[in-house]
Image (cartoon, rainbow, N blue to C red; front, side):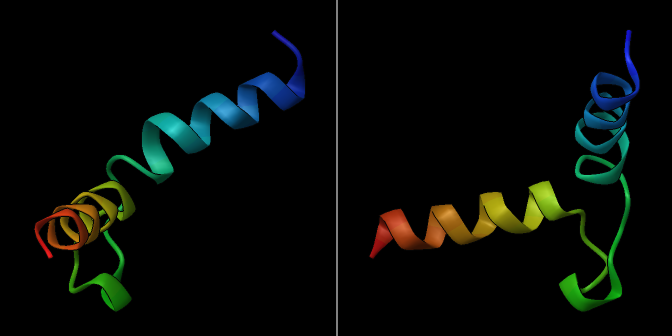
Length: 43
C-alpha cells in the first residue's frame, strides 16, 4: 500500500469514525453527519 492509500485508510477508519471532536459535542464526524442528514431528510 502506498502512502496516499494508507493516509486515506487512516482518515476513514480512525479519524472520521472514532475520533471525538469538542466542536461536535464530543461526537465523531460520522455521527455528526448522520444526525445532520437524518434531520435534513425528516424536514
